[in-house]
Length: 204
Image (tube, rainbow, N blue to C red):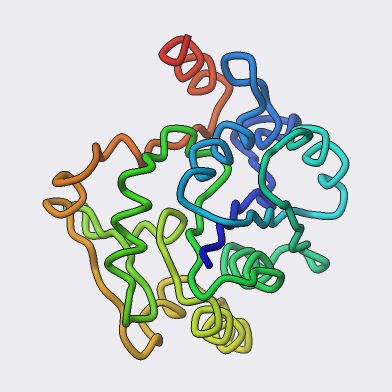
Protein backbone atom coordinates (compact mmCIF):
# COMPACT_ATOMS: atom_id res chain seq x y z
CA UNK A 1 0.00 0.00 0.00
CA UNK A 2 1.45 3.33 -1.10
CA UNK A 3 0.20 6.73 -0.07
CA UNK A 4 0.62 10.06 -1.78
CA UNK A 5 0.75 13.25 0.28
CA UNK A 6 0.46 16.70 -1.29
CA UNK A 7 1.67 19.59 0.87
CA UNK A 8 -0.53 22.63 0.21
CA UNK A 9 -0.71 24.49 3.52
CA UNK A 10 1.88 27.19 2.88
CA UNK A 11 0.88 30.84 2.60
CA UNK A 12 2.50 31.40 -0.84
CA UNK A 13 3.59 34.94 -0.01
CA UNK A 14 5.40 35.41 -3.33
CA UNK A 15 2.26 34.41 -5.21
CA UNK A 16 0.15 37.29 -3.91
CA UNK A 17 -3.26 37.02 -2.27
CA UNK A 18 -4.46 34.04 -4.33
CA UNK A 19 -3.98 30.44 -3.17
CA UNK A 20 -1.55 28.94 -5.64
CA UNK A 21 -2.65 25.40 -4.77
CA UNK A 22 -5.88 25.97 -6.70
CA UNK A 23 -4.55 28.47 -9.23
CA UNK A 24 -5.46 27.48 -12.77
CA UNK A 25 -2.53 25.99 -14.64
CA UNK A 26 -3.25 25.30 -18.30
CA UNK A 27 -6.92 24.69 -17.56
CA UNK A 28 -6.61 22.70 -14.34
CA UNK A 29 -5.94 23.64 -10.70
CA UNK A 30 -2.25 23.21 -9.97
CA UNK A 31 -2.88 20.79 -7.09
CA UNK A 32 -4.94 18.61 -9.41
CA UNK A 33 -2.06 18.46 -11.88
CA UNK A 34 0.22 17.20 -9.12
CA UNK A 35 -2.41 14.70 -7.97
CA UNK A 36 -2.91 13.40 -11.50
CA UNK A 37 0.82 12.78 -11.85
CA UNK A 38 0.87 10.83 -8.59
CA UNK A 39 -2.21 8.74 -9.37
CA UNK A 40 -0.48 5.92 -11.31
CA UNK A 41 2.00 5.18 -8.50
CA UNK A 42 -0.06 5.55 -5.29
CA UNK A 43 -3.14 3.85 -3.86
CA UNK A 44 -4.56 6.77 -1.89
CA UNK A 45 -4.03 10.50 -1.59
CA UNK A 46 -3.80 12.82 1.41
CA UNK A 47 -3.84 16.60 1.03
CA UNK A 48 -2.23 18.68 3.76
CA UNK A 49 -3.74 22.15 3.93
CA UNK A 50 -5.17 24.78 6.26
CA UNK A 51 -8.85 24.46 7.23
CA UNK A 52 -9.68 27.64 5.27
CA UNK A 53 -8.37 26.02 2.07
CA UNK A 54 -10.32 22.80 2.32
CA UNK A 55 -13.47 23.78 0.44
CA UNK A 56 -11.61 25.12 -2.61
CA UNK A 57 -9.27 22.14 -2.68
CA UNK A 58 -12.18 19.69 -2.42
CA UNK A 59 -13.68 21.40 -5.46
CA UNK A 60 -10.36 21.08 -7.30
CA UNK A 61 -10.19 17.37 -6.46
CA UNK A 62 -13.78 16.59 -7.49
CA UNK A 63 -13.91 13.46 -9.65
CA UNK A 64 -10.40 12.29 -8.70
CA UNK A 65 -10.22 8.52 -9.05
CA UNK A 66 -8.50 7.73 -5.75
CA UNK A 67 -9.75 8.20 -2.21
CA UNK A 68 -8.70 11.61 -0.88
CA UNK A 69 -8.22 12.38 2.83
CA UNK A 70 -7.18 15.66 4.43
CA UNK A 71 -4.47 16.25 7.03
CA UNK A 72 -5.16 19.73 8.33
CA UNK A 73 -2.81 22.33 9.78
CA UNK A 74 -4.89 23.21 12.82
CA UNK A 75 -2.02 25.38 14.12
CA UNK A 76 -0.41 27.76 11.65
CA UNK A 77 3.16 28.97 11.40
CA UNK A 78 4.96 25.69 12.12
CA UNK A 79 6.36 25.29 8.61
CA UNK A 80 6.93 22.22 6.45
CA UNK A 81 7.79 19.93 9.37
CA UNK A 82 4.21 20.27 10.63
CA UNK A 83 2.86 20.07 7.09
CA UNK A 84 4.54 16.75 6.47
CA UNK A 85 3.59 15.44 9.93
CA UNK A 86 -0.05 16.45 9.43
CA UNK A 87 -0.13 15.05 5.91
CA UNK A 88 1.20 11.71 7.13
CA UNK A 89 -1.35 11.44 9.97
CA UNK A 90 -4.24 10.02 7.85
CA UNK A 91 -1.97 8.01 5.53
CA UNK A 92 -2.58 4.26 5.71
CA UNK A 93 0.29 3.13 3.48
CA UNK A 94 3.60 1.86 4.80
CA UNK A 95 5.37 4.44 2.62
CA UNK A 96 4.24 7.80 1.31
CA UNK A 97 5.44 9.98 -1.54
CA UNK A 98 5.39 13.58 -0.28
CA UNK A 99 5.18 16.25 -2.99
CA UNK A 100 4.57 19.99 -2.76
CA UNK A 101 1.48 21.35 -4.49
CA UNK A 102 3.61 23.77 -6.52
CA UNK A 103 5.60 21.07 -8.33
CA UNK A 104 3.37 20.40 -11.35
CA UNK A 105 6.15 18.78 -13.38
CA UNK A 106 6.80 15.96 -10.89
CA UNK A 107 7.72 12.86 -12.91
CA UNK A 108 6.02 9.55 -12.23
CA UNK A 109 9.20 7.62 -13.04
CA UNK A 110 11.10 9.46 -10.31
CA UNK A 111 8.43 8.80 -7.68
CA UNK A 112 8.40 5.12 -8.63
CA UNK A 113 12.20 5.04 -8.32
CA UNK A 114 12.08 6.72 -4.90
CA UNK A 115 9.56 4.13 -3.66
CA UNK A 116 11.95 1.40 -4.80
CA UNK A 117 14.94 3.06 -3.15
CA UNK A 118 13.09 3.53 0.14
CA UNK A 119 12.37 -0.19 0.53
CA UNK A 120 14.02 -1.52 3.73
CA UNK A 121 14.89 2.05 4.76
CA UNK A 122 13.02 4.93 6.34
CA UNK A 123 13.19 7.31 3.40
CA UNK A 124 14.60 8.05 -0.03
CA UNK A 125 15.37 11.75 -0.35
CA UNK A 126 16.86 13.44 -3.44
CA UNK A 127 19.83 15.73 -2.97
CA UNK A 128 20.93 17.48 -6.13
CA UNK A 129 24.35 18.90 -6.92
CA UNK A 130 23.33 22.11 -5.14
CA UNK A 131 23.78 20.15 -1.91
CA UNK A 132 20.25 20.74 -0.69
CA UNK A 133 17.74 18.01 0.08
CA UNK A 134 14.42 17.96 -1.79
CA UNK A 135 12.17 16.98 1.16
CA UNK A 136 8.94 17.81 -0.66
CA UNK A 137 9.58 15.39 -3.47
CA UNK A 138 10.65 12.35 -1.50
CA UNK A 139 9.37 9.03 -0.16
CA UNK A 140 9.15 8.30 3.57
CA UNK A 141 8.24 5.36 5.76
CA UNK A 142 5.06 6.81 7.23
CA UNK A 143 5.47 5.75 10.85
CA UNK A 144 9.16 6.68 11.07
CA UNK A 145 8.85 10.10 9.46
CA UNK A 146 5.74 10.99 11.41
CA UNK A 147 7.62 10.29 14.65
CA UNK A 148 10.72 12.18 13.47
CA UNK A 149 8.59 15.23 12.65
CA UNK A 150 6.95 15.06 16.07
CA UNK A 151 10.36 15.11 17.73
CA UNK A 152 11.54 17.99 15.54
CA UNK A 153 8.44 19.98 16.45
CA UNK A 154 9.42 19.69 20.11
CA UNK A 155 12.56 21.75 19.41
CA UNK A 156 13.01 25.47 18.85
CA UNK A 157 12.94 26.35 15.15
CA UNK A 158 12.15 22.88 13.76
CA UNK A 159 13.72 22.16 10.38
CA UNK A 160 12.73 19.39 8.02
CA UNK A 161 16.38 18.45 7.47
CA UNK A 162 16.66 17.70 11.19
CA UNK A 163 13.74 15.28 10.97
CA UNK A 164 15.27 13.56 7.94
CA UNK A 165 18.72 13.21 9.45
CA UNK A 166 17.25 11.78 12.64
CA UNK A 167 15.71 8.84 10.76
CA UNK A 168 17.46 5.56 11.61
CA UNK A 169 18.22 4.81 7.97
CA UNK A 170 17.59 6.89 4.87
CA UNK A 171 18.80 6.76 1.29
CA UNK A 172 20.21 9.89 -0.33
CA UNK A 173 19.42 9.92 -4.05
CA UNK A 174 22.00 12.08 -5.79
CA UNK A 175 21.56 14.01 -9.03
CA UNK A 176 23.19 11.33 -11.15
CA UNK A 177 20.70 8.76 -9.84
CA UNK A 178 17.80 11.16 -10.42
CA UNK A 179 18.90 11.78 -13.99
CA UNK A 180 19.09 8.04 -14.64
CA UNK A 181 15.28 7.91 -14.48
CA UNK A 182 13.95 11.47 -14.85
CA UNK A 183 14.76 15.10 -15.47
CA UNK A 184 15.72 17.46 -12.68
CA UNK A 185 12.85 19.54 -14.06
CA UNK A 186 10.71 17.30 -11.87
CA UNK A 187 11.68 19.60 -8.97
CA UNK A 188 10.68 22.83 -10.69
CA UNK A 189 8.23 24.75 -8.56
CA UNK A 190 5.86 27.62 -9.21
CA UNK A 191 6.21 30.49 -6.73
CA UNK A 192 4.98 33.58 -8.56
CA UNK A 193 2.24 34.53 -11.05
CA UNK A 194 4.96 34.98 -13.66
CA UNK A 195 6.21 31.43 -13.12
CA UNK A 196 2.61 30.19 -13.32
CA UNK A 197 2.17 31.90 -16.69
CA UNK A 198 5.42 30.38 -17.97
CA UNK A 199 4.44 26.92 -16.75
CA UNK A 200 1.00 27.26 -18.39
CA UNK A 201 2.63 28.21 -21.67
CA UNK A 202 4.83 25.13 -21.55
CA UNK A 203 1.95 22.80 -20.75
CA UNK A 204 -0.32 24.24 -23.42
